[in-house]
Amino acid sequence: MGLLIAAAITTALALTGFAILLGHADDRRAMTLAFLVTLPLSPLMVYLVRLPIDGLLRTSFGVSAGIVTIISLFYAPLTEEPAKWLAAAVPRVRLAIHKDPIFVALAAGLGFGVGEIWFLTYALINSPGYPDLPFWMFSGFAIERLEVCFLHGALLLPPFYALACGRSFLLGALAGMTGHFLLNFPIYLAATNTFSLGEKWKSLLSLWVLLFVLLGAIFALVLPRRPSRRVTEQP
Image: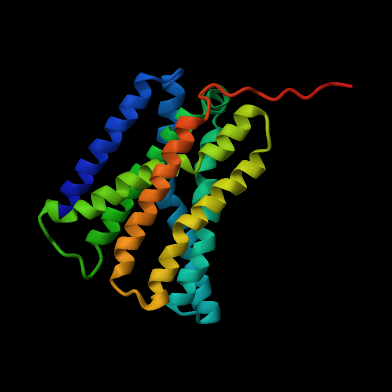
């Protein structure tokens, strides 16, 4: 019950952030659509893509959990980022991206992050070693999930902003996936206890995620909210 309460509080805080975005949005309907489209994509991506890949790797090649962790460093950005791009397939959302890419990216990221909160909550509660603790004991979960809700949007900024500016969506997408890979890379280092840091890895991982949050916030604040669209000269 404690984790459910923590997840509910975390979701309420994320929705508060979404409400603030809506209050300053140019197109509230498009923002809401972006949020709703990405809301179920985290569990869908896991069940339809990630788990089948894990199963195939384990049964076909007999790979260990450690090897799967290494491979996941690549397929996490290769699956989660394209899943979030699906929001741009909605015509009204795509039109809003051209006008307000930063806010739409953050809204889509929040939707994906909130869906991920409840998917992880369900998975943890149904895991054998789930500790039924008071909700305040899950403060680390709440803080991490709120950070990730923002980071999902921040990693959408490069492709959405490139689309708004008339530049290469592919290059922006590669930038977002590269950022996702760099965000996850220390998880592999911690899993293999690189440099023999032991428990110190937990603090380092928290600081690493916080660094990405700060960089994402700076990126969102520095970029002009109304991008100048590149116009190709006609011969």
